[in-house]
Amino acid sequence: MNQPTIAVITYNTPHRKTQDVLHGLKAKGYQYVKIYALPFVRRENPFKPIFQHRPSKAINIEIEDYARNFNYQFATTTAETLNQQLIEDKADFVIIAGAGLLPDDLVVNHKIINTHPGFLPKTRGLDSLKWAIVKGVEIGVTTHFVDTEADAGFLIEQKLVPIYHNDTFHSVATRQYEMEIEMLINSIELIPNLLEFPSLSTTEYEATRRMPKTIEQDLMDSFEIYKNKFQLTE
Image (cartoon, rainbow, N blue to C red; front, side, top):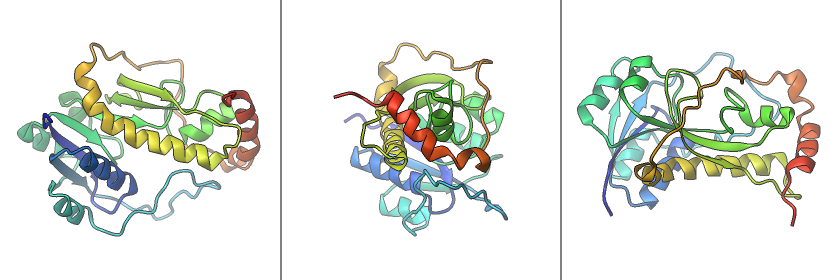
């Protein structure tokens, strides 16, 4: 196996998606992985949705210990220092396993890979799964190179999340999350074989914010309508 060097951007705290990404990289046999851990700032009054749709329970092991146990490199970083660290380390691939908005100089100077839980550009922003259901547009997952425009950049791969007659909202949410992890990891093998990366920039679709609870309270009813429209037939 040709071993690329992989940089993983994440938070300096136990984090479920990061742990799942690291498990996937290890299972694929990637050896040269370096984790860059950004400070994690806890909000005083975090938003609490009516319906939690993202897995959040992480194994209670610090990310530095995770790196050591997997024989991966580890470095703490900040939004101000990460750009220079990546320039110096020259990784073949840079992936986001957990991070907020990144500084413009970082995304301009590096091809950073992200997975978005939505079919870009139709569902940009927060709570993409929930908004897709309410708006009646396809639920999907997109891997892309990020740029200075939120949830845009350049397309690597897109897939629709299949919907089945016996699905629940949470089974679809779990399937979408699992596809995110798989597609992010698989992008490392996919990218070298692609000839072009179409732009996802658009003015047609606006980025969404957190879904208001006045809308979210009817989400399960909206999901049943959505499922009847999009479910796969036998």
